[in-house]
Image (cartoon, rainbow, N blue to C red; front, side):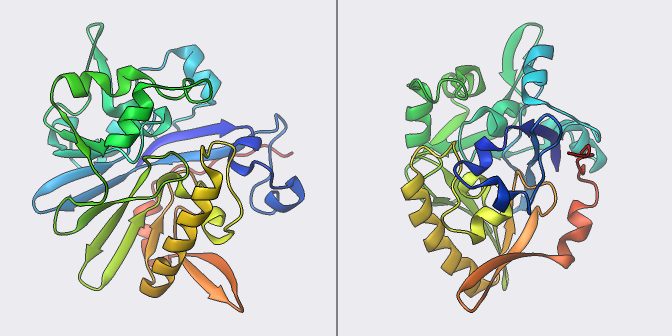
Length: 286
């Protein structure tokens, strides 16, 4: 499910990767911007509707939306819920992989000038370490950690803080994946012999999962991110896991493959019905 698309400077997602390499994956437009999706995941398990990440939400003013280059050609996340016959009141649990605003801005909403939970009947979960860092941002992180996205939930007793890996339901497990932030978590999905992972910002684009040394300018601990990816690359290969990428608009669901020691991500054909409704960026010629 989509909360839209944003357009960002490629120096963010690609860091020190030369343009000669990343332009094979995505070519910047005339404004030197590349598209990133805000693709969230709705999971049904044990009678619960579980939402994993929720995009930027609806609290941005016109300037804020413009700064993100935000586009919503198919509507926002709540519109996506409505196409499934659901409303925000039907969400039972929200899992925040981390508290950067493009992942959790939709946690809360403005109602008559007051910040309220956007999903009024839901509990929220995030890692305690992530909440601690978000509550005490530094010069680098204060532009993406905003207390209005999480403090009202803490104060209302609606957000539970996790202490590392935790089984949420029979089918859903949160696992620590540090590097992008110290408290970043991914979400493992299991049903019978099928395994998936909502990767979140362990790998911004699917190519980041295959090319271990490609780290973003946003990773606060890039060497830790590399170590984390190495661990989960092996895991994904062994299980032929479906990998869900929040920011990759052209390859949002993929599997990792390896040949002669070189890894690649391959689109999952069986996932096409899941992603048919996702917006595809209309990129001007560069």
